[in-house]
Image (cartoon, rainbow over all chains, first blue to last red; front, side):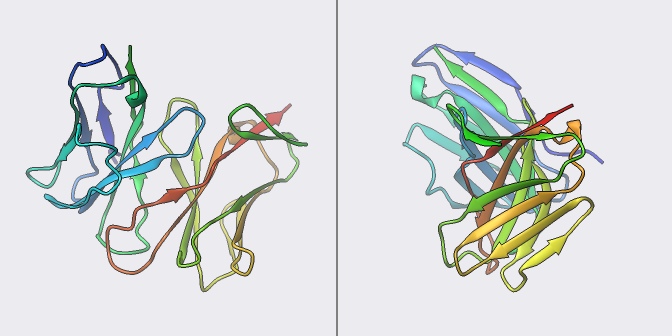
Length: 115
Length: 114
């Protein structure tokens, strides 16, 4: 079956530009997570949605980062006024139910390069 | 042998040998642990998981061991194949409630030599 998909796969932005990254989770999955992965490191949590509700945004590094999931399916991570330190791979993951022990399935990520 | 590279620790093994990848986790409250495999240009892929009420779990060619006393996890891969070459991450999280974000370890680069 279809897995988690993300678009675009690659994005080059000039410093100060706004970007929007899209995540299509597995159909019917309740939970959706965004992670940021710097080069050579493990993914780090950004934010979490239960259906359309953003229940945890404690990992967002600044108020330039904003995420939404208005209909409880597709999610968009927006970064305003991008900075060079925002360069990373942004990963989206979804899980079937919102409870412990559920496997998180990851998309291929969007590789963002800010020049 | 095992060495610390510029970014990631690296484990090099011969094809057909067994691999052991180690991970130390940080949070004593974590009670669910997962191993992920990440190939270049791809997202992490689930391999195997283990709950804190277990100390060993076996899958196909993989075994995870958990030592809660010293907060240590290991992933054993039997008869390592070239397709096993990737970065392996352990992740920890909680079992209670929802929204259980994953906390990933540093990662280990596994290189399989023919």
